[in-house]
Image 1 (tube, rainbow, N blue to C red):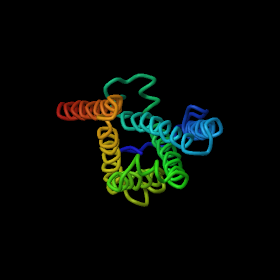
Image 2 (cartoon, rainbow, N blue to C red; image 1 turned 30 degrees about the vertical axis):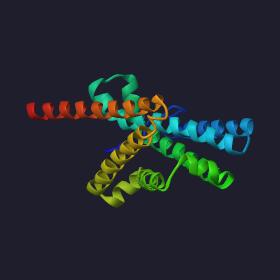
Image 3 (tube, helix red, strand yellow; image 1 turned 135 degrees about the horizontal axis):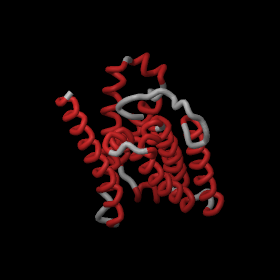
Length: 211
């Protein structure tokens, strides 16, 4: 789920490649079920899962979104790991947001009153658009789909997709800043990664001009 693709990492283990993806998936599922069993399969439990997965989704998206730029600017073992596993981090983000959506639907079915206090039709439209692109990014994050779409079409889809998701995070959190100043933090983090990507792009252009 990035603007460029890489093959499946050659190294294996629970922190690499598909081992990392399943580690993230199981961890997210365990966290969500834990909240539900402790708080209950009701409004409180679903709202906690929504809040928790909103945070894990942000972290995983930022990791995938920043991976290439971070390695370009600061080549190191950790940034190399990020770039090598950005596909799985992106799919982990999609899984986190899938659980997030399930919790939202469960809240809507369980407590419609609370659901409509927390959202509105405009947010549903913008959120739904972001989810559409997340689904497209996840579905095309495999080598077979890259070949089926062709590198050019695939690249355009993922370029637009990641930027739409990034802007969605800014919009979703930015509109809540008047409610709590803490929502400025995720906005600042997304903006920081956007600046990071711009810096990396400038460095690449300078290197190309000197080549």
